[in-house]
Image 1 (tube, rainbow over the protein chains, first blue to last red):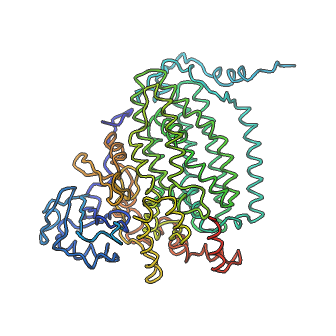
Image 2 (cartoon, rainbow over the protein chains, first blue to last red; image 1 turned 60 degrees about the vertical axis):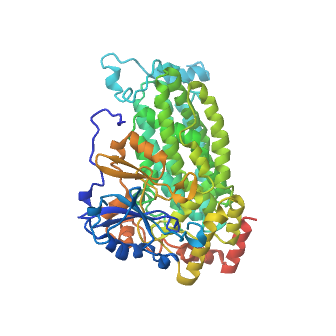
Image 3 (tube, one colour; image 1 turned 120 degrees about the horizontal axis):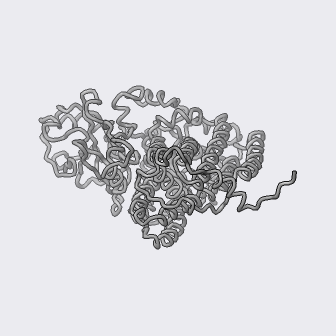
Length: 119
Length: 512
């Protein structure tokens, strides 16, 4: 469908990648941990290795959660843009299909939030 | 000279319909360029009925009387320092959210109805729109007077106009209204007069004004009741405009239904802020959000849509999702404000034991199971390690602009993720309702000014919270953060001559 308008209604999208100073926006959500009320949004270099995201970015978001220290990274299930995902820790984000405004979710089996209540 | 007195009907005819004329040297299409492009077909504008038959002289006389009384009460409120009579200074935060969120919308409504009054070709809706435009301006003014009074004593009110264009959660009401105002005149009145004022306004005004009365805030009660008496006229306009469109041509039905679907969902998402006020921000509670939704939407709204069924109109799409969400909405939204209380112009806090008991009682299926463990954790964290905040910015819904905090309709433990691809870019949504709205008019919503993305683009004063707060014109440590440590609370205790213990006793008594 299209907007009904009195003239040709076309405007530039507000959040194209070129506006983020060399970064791309990436969204990150930790399933079953709703103490963090919503997924996060961060600008990251497209060539950042996935391993750097895990080691350097995620702790700043999540290490205040009591489950964080117990995460077994070998067992984590990743979902990128709603599809199961096997990350390559060495490869850059973009090179493995994580683009501007991609959504990265992860699940930590056995760790289901405070009191197991998805918090 | 003795003139014969006109009866109401004659007067209405003379002062409304008779003021219109048939243009002779310009075409109607040129004079009213917005009248047809939305696809609404009107055969006879004279079929428009105004049940109030309001004329300008009556309006002036009646409103002037009302204003005189209203301002006398606001004046007396100020002279008696009646702000000290509210139940507890936490209450003021509900007021901050309401007055900074809604007052600019009243002004926007004033502009919107001036535009619809200009753009409708019929004299009846022109006049109704113009009266409502003046009403909305009066409402904005009385609310600004109330802001002015509370601003002398409490933080967070000082630059509401500036904040409205910048602060992340105020982008929710702002973008709601901008969406309506940038539509055509028929969609605008369907959005504001029908979906918001007729279907949903009771949920904004009734709980909020009773909340003000319960919490002894007579300034708010006063402007609330003054506005409420205009609301009945606005609601009538809302219903009238819908029936008029539906009766004029059956080709209008699917267009109107689409607008009802869209604006029900937009309005419902906006009211998520009200759910949190009702369940968390009123020291003395009136009713729960769930109870209010059952009474004002499920019962009253259900009856309304039964009446409209004869025109071929059904319940708004996704109404059943709103029912599934009713026992979690307020808890999810309060969590958002608790997470990001360092970036807001209101204070946040954890409910105390009595309040938690109230929440358990009102939400037996959800509160103890999903939210109490989270709150207990935050409580403990606060005692041991200080107040917890979320230090990474949230992902927002492209349509409603609220952080993506809402959960799957059938699973309160799973964030609801929806997305669409449009011209090579992904867009994310909190719900099927918000996704459908985007998919229907993507050209409009790709332009959304999303506060989080704007911060990362470098358009909001800097990348750190203090820099962004400065750009919002908020003072760190004064307007934001935890209520217990706030200047508002310290002043309150001092003014009331209260010890912390006495404060706790009073807070407990509020709900007994």
